[in-house]
Image (tube, rainbow, N blue to C red):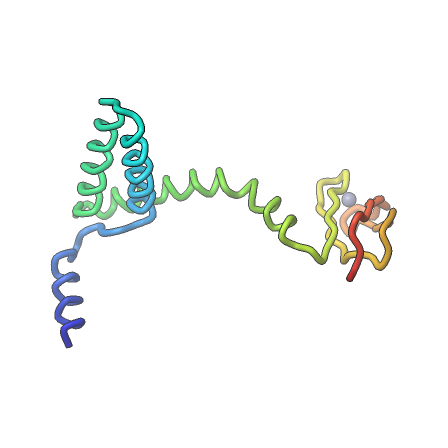
Length: 141
Ligand SMILES: [Zn+2]
């Protein structure tokens, strides 16, 4: 009951406003980092950056120009994706303990299950048919 009333009040207050999106979340992280920096550095620049971040958070949070805010958020997400995506494959390969990966000269990445024995293994590329050598340092458990 109370939860519903609070929820309705919250919705009314934020009706037509941008609220929290990915960019606002990122700005909060920046604000936290700046606050930590502020403890160690007694600098006007850090304080000024904190103030600017706080103002932009408030502005973006309460803004009614949703079209512009959504666009800003999209730009931010595109940049973030561009930074993270090259590392995503590397992280996935490190986490994957059951397969071996090898990049063929044609550009395709070949994924094969771990062999029963350690050593040199051969696989055929499904794209160009070239035989590739994989050195297996791990074996199936
Ligand atoms: Zn190939």
